[in-house]
Image 1 (cartoon, rainbow, N blue to C red):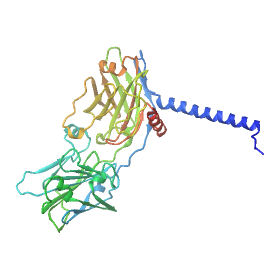
Image 2: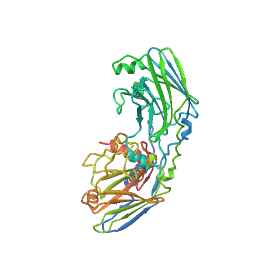
Image 3: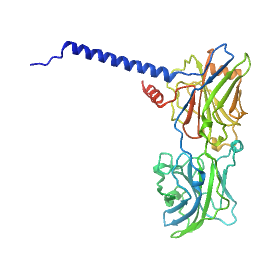
Image 4: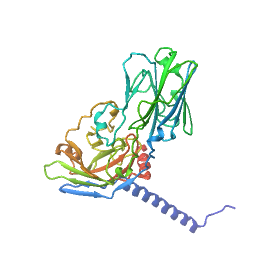
Length: 423
């Protein structure tokens, strides 16, 4: 005997299915509208508008006390093909957001010119930071090989080994073949010297010197200790330094929270944008502001681009973009159709040319101002009468810690990525 679903039950199931599908469709439409909406728009004919209370907080990477990376001792042990470097710190090496460790390898040559290494060549950046930064260290030996350990474990971008090029790493991550062991205050690295010197097309020198340096990521060096002239089969220890460890303040993340944007555009005059933050930006070494401009209505169809960190998908394609690295370091560009890439290589340049038609200044306290020429405003509008602006703020080299003028929560980020993935 066949089982038959009663007609009333089948109708009920069909009704529930229709309601479920309608609910899903409503949720998709609501999410699409919510995640694409830009809430700070200057309409045609409006001379001034103030956007307030639109900030959303994102994940704030943990900050550490710089003194954790004070070096107490470095011990170096060599064999025929490798070196074991044991570093004892005052604190722990645990925070990939905030902590870096470097090793420099080379021969000591009496009478040779001093060797130095700098984290950046941009002197304006150093001048704009509100506290002293130890940007350059002196090495008592040649800089044949540089090892950058940017995280406490092996990840895609760390360790980094520089052998034949001072700017581009020869090998990164698992290909670096660095054995790392971290236990409490001790960081132990085993480096395959023979493999590295083979890339230099030379044998491993009989005597080598080693310098271990610690640094706050994207800021400056903290401490430096060298161990000189270690021969094969020998162990040496060093704990002497040329100058005391550097100290840097912990970032106040409230300075990354935008409280309001005020847009003022008198007829024929430059556009003025006044930005107010929840706390003064005193730490430009760990602060980037990114402003994105969009014509309204926006006819730029296509996949939405990522933000400069590539961790956040933006709601729409922008028509103009500006990054503020510090009060005197400003970068702006238009996408020229499809180029939604961002500034790169800024640590290697000595100057950053100011963009035409855009200026930035500190007004004091928590207020900052942009001035944008009518010509750039026309680029922003792309023939439309109105435009929207939205902002992300965060630590240099990391994802945003807040956004303003659009929905940047995880739900919207996932929705935009799925939308981009659709054919």
